[in-house]
Image (cartoon, rainbow, N blue to C red):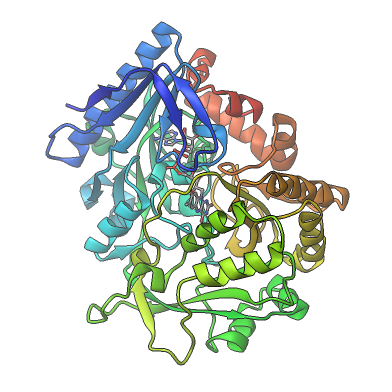
Length: 504
Ligand SMILES: Cc1cc2nc3c(=O)[nH]c(=O)nc-3n(C[C@H](O)[C@H](O)[C@H](O)COP(=O)(O)OP(=O)(O)OC[C@H]3O[C@@H](n4cnc5c(N)ncnc54)[C@H](O)[C@@H]3O)c2cc1C
């Protein structure tokens, strides 16, 4: 039997200590000792549904919590129930009999994961099965449901976000336990029944559920598609770039860019961290990952040496918080000191599995994270204006360029065929907020289209969300009504931020 552990009323603060709330009850959901994945899922779904029904009766709101890593207030609930999912963290392989007859050949590539498994746990379980996810974010402590809920992405430029891996989502509402899949279906009737669920095979409901921002019900499990296990070779270095390089990236000439700074081949992953005060006068931190076949005999380097993330950079927050002068110098010093040791073309190669490219993260109080996503081809035109307006606000963070394809989900910020994500990460200074607001204003003035990350500082409201996502937003809202037809069921998931965003 799954169970709920109640911790009582308390003040809860998110991971980066950017927001707190007074919760009427903090609860933890934990698995029982059922010995099959299906029985475990059934027990968890039934427990969650009983909890949602109790909340409805008592007129309380419920907030499912992942790792609490979103610095935006989407994971808060005032005077409601905050339900932690970290202990619903089992991962399983699937066999052919769990799938619909015409899908059975896909069993090997699919994994069943519970919502609260961390990205790291999913990576590790996939590797044990000889499989791998294709992309991820800069770090690995988010839960898989929480990371997908906001469209967490990295810079593997041929993929969108973590939610792209999803092939089916199990969502619990007060009325139903759904397995939501595309209209083509995926699961066998028996698997659906044995997990106490009903099938909702609907393209829009599925595309809404892939990126649900925590407002489509309680996600209890997912089925993810994986690749055969592979490795990546890491090259990272500090180097000066110039405006022609920005144009090169804007055109998607990643191979050419790579040939100039690292290997003469197309990178699997490409990321640039820049000093926004002087992006061409100061060295940028470049990171390239190249896909390699799996070779079990290669000793794995420490994750930090093979990284797809940039966790160490958050350390610069501490250096920056107390210093107001010479920001350009301090920022550059912090960037270069905090970056894991350079690994250039001539150094012994650092090769790791994808799951070993990110490292554990230590929470640092009071960080600012904000980003804008736009069509990649607009980068060359927008770059100067973005940095100029950012610096006019006083700045204080680094600027990171990451590249992704159109991501899955009706509300995916990466909405164009090819996208650049421009991140601003650093200390939670007033100047960082001012600078981010300046960037937004400047892009709007120039009528350059862009979107913002659901889990980070974004200054969004319902009108703007409707404008940014247009018909996709309307379809998402209709799908929400299909998943939870009763408005009072949707209200159970209300919090101030999601109401403000027009997502409840
Ligand atoms: C150190 C660090 C590094 C990061 N790196 C990146 C990055 O590289 N790229 C990027 O895009 N983002 C990044 N982020 C942002 C982060 O990935 C997202 O904010 C992500 O959503 C956090 O996942 P979480 O499990 O902590 O979810 P939470 O913050 O706990 O929740 C996010 C939303 O999902 C909902 N939710 C969670 N679980 C469920 C569930 N089971 N059912 C229904 N709703 C649920 C919550 O209620 C909330 O609305 C980073 C954040 C940190 C702190």
